[in-house]
Image 1 (cartoon, helix red, strand yellow):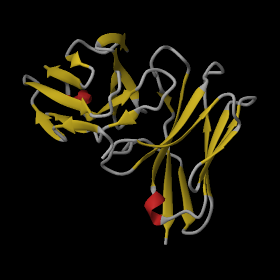
Image 2: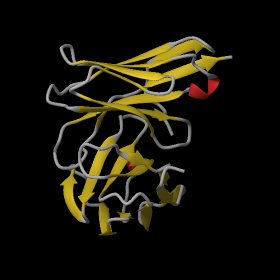
Image 3: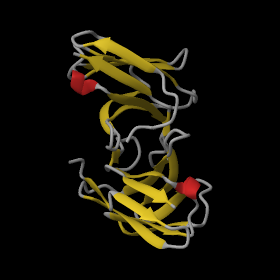
Length: 112
Length: 113
């Protein structure tokens, strides 16, 4: 148990579907992150939220839409994805800068 | 959970041996470094960290060494166990107000009984 919980753990969706990934952290952290881990690249930072405000969008396509309603919850809304978006999506959190980032177990996404 | 499909460098050791995993980082301005372990089907797990004002830090069975001159980081695991088998990533960052970690591609550690 890392203190960062992601659901669902596995998701298969068609290219025309709309789905969402959910992340919740129980660590009292103020920063939350979405990372993508695919078969062909190292871990890639997608989005950063600091005190609910988005502070980083790492050139992510608009078919990925993050939402951070509060410091404990983070969503990734998925719409009209492509097969190459199939990957492990990791949520993480940290307490400000200069401190360790803790990851969830990830959501395995397959786009068919 | 590991970067399946990537051609990862692999380190194969026998149980009980000491393991050394190396990492070259890219940004000379980076001031904080973390080693993560990722087992199959799981997210990265924090192992140990080190700040740029240090050159060595020890944990339980693990030691991280930092050489800023050549931008090199290493993770030493003492008395390696089969449960240590995983992919190990180094990550670097500098103070931006939040953590913008840059990850290496990882090294797969295989421990034989």
